[in-house]
Every structure is written in structure tokens, then in C-alpha cells.
Length: 366
Image 1 (cartoon, one colour):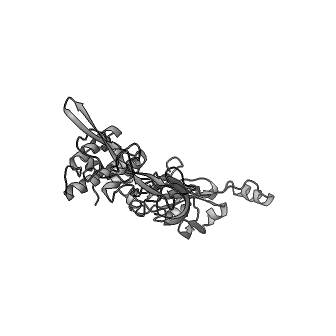
Image 2 (tube, rainbow, N blue to C red):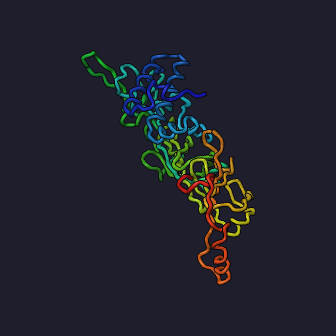
Image 3 (cartoon, rainbow, N blue to C red):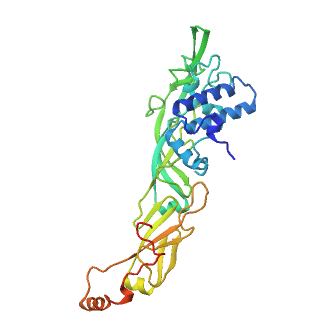
């Protein structure tokens, strides 16, 4: 069971962006690897704090987490919204919080001030899904145009930072001499700069390449939810750099006859006077295939038939919604002479007069 992100940072759910950042800085200082050399528990807590901050500092991810919890990301086929495999990822993503931020002797890049691994920029795409895709989950293959390091590009040690990836400044303050480190402005913290690049590459040694990426989308996703495919964004310059991520934004294609409400699906079924009076059976298309339903004799317009468990699965694993059939008795707009005569005769018949019972709910009550 994963620990709650708010609990990890020691804050309330209503904390604003400033409070979240302040709490993360506090935890980062407490568990920083430079302050706890060789302490595996501190390193794990440092990673957990970064994971919590990655989610809660992003308004979209925070909203998804507040609504679905960890399932909003863990259910995304391993793409997730948080989690770091190594310290370089953390320092690469949150270097602005450590570098030059009053951390004193801490280098802000781990391992006693080692070279930072620069991360490439993220790419964002939209993937459109039908309600049938959402019901079952689907694997989509999309073509992505991303920046990659050109074949044959070479790098050399940065002359500004001498390959460290950082520049250090010492300032005199009322508390004494304070040393701060920040990413090198020349190489962006990579510790390397272009040595030679092939024809066609840009100033960073990059070229565009098209790649087909397979995206496994879990069942039950909602409009606007974001999935992350790690390492499928743009490359960054430098031999030790890591690529950015591919952010996949889900869009739902509106269905012609089915309407989604959370995990439930609504369907308007139109039947004739004859079908309403005599009853019978009808075949209905659901997101999980065709089903046959029975209509009782004398069924009323506005009746709702519930097919339990025939809706959409919950992305957080809390079961499956229902398929709700709204019965509508269709009134013909034109009648033949014989049909008019029939209804004229039936107009004063007792069975044709409205006689709602207590268990027949009105439209407003429904």
C-alpha cells in the first residue's frame, strides 16, 4: 500500500503551492544524500518526497490524485505520474529547488556534487478514444516526431564549469560565508558541450526523427486524464543526458446514442404504443456487446431499466458501473384515417385513461 503523498510531505490536503514547495524543501534537506551519505533509508525517503512533490506541485496531476488517489497513475499501465528510479532524475527535474537555494554546502545534485544528468523536454499528444475503447482498455500505436541526438555527434568537457555541471558562488552574509551551487549557464548542468556535429544537426547536435510508440491505455479512463510514457520525449544534449517523457492526454469521442456519466452509461430506448401496451423483447447494443431485454406489458414512458455491471469499469478498481435504459414511448405524428378512427373509439375507454399509482414516479421525482 503506497503512502499518502500529503502524509509524506507532512501537509494538509488543502495546502497551496507555496506550502507544498516549502514542505518539499524541508524534507529534501532532511533526507538529502549529501547530508546522509550511505543511508539507504534516507535515500528512499528522499525519493518518496520527490515523487510526492512531482504530483502535488502540478495542478492537473494534483486534481487527478485528489480524485482517484494513487490509482490515477498506478493504473496507467506502468506509465504513472510519479516515481523516480535514480537520484539523477530527481536532481534533473527539481534542480531549481536545490541549486542556489540556500542549501549551504549541499551541491544539490547528489553524490557530493556530481554532474547533473540533463533531461530532455516532454512532448504532449492527444489520443481520442471511443466509449468501447474505454470500456475494455486498448493499446494505441501513435507516430511521434521527437528530437534525438544526431548520429556522429560528439561532446567535450564544458570550459565554463570544467565538466562539473555546476558553478559555485561564495557570498558574505550576516550568517557568515555562504556557498551555493547552481547549474552551469553554458552547458545547462550537463558538464559537456558540442565538440563536433554532423551536417543537418542543430546547434545542440539534434535532429528530428519519427518513431512509432505503443501506448497501453487502461480501461475506465476519463476525459482529460494524462498518462506518461517515460523516455519517449525529446533527447537532451550530452552523453549522460536522459530523454524527456511523452504525455498522453485522453479525449473521449462522443457516441451517437450512448451518454456517459462517470462509470454509468445512459441509453434512450424508443418504443411504439403497441410495444408499450403489449410488451415484448428488444435487442440493445451495449459497450460489452448485444443484450436482449424484456419489456413488461403496459410499460410507461420514463421507466428506467438498469443492467447492473454493464457500464464502465472504475479506473481505481472500485467495480463497474451500470447501463441505464430510459424507456420513451413514441407518439406518432401522423395517423391514417383508420388509425384515427381506432383512437377516437379508444379515447373514452377506461384502460386508455391515465391512472398513475403511488409507485409510478413523476418525471421530476425520477
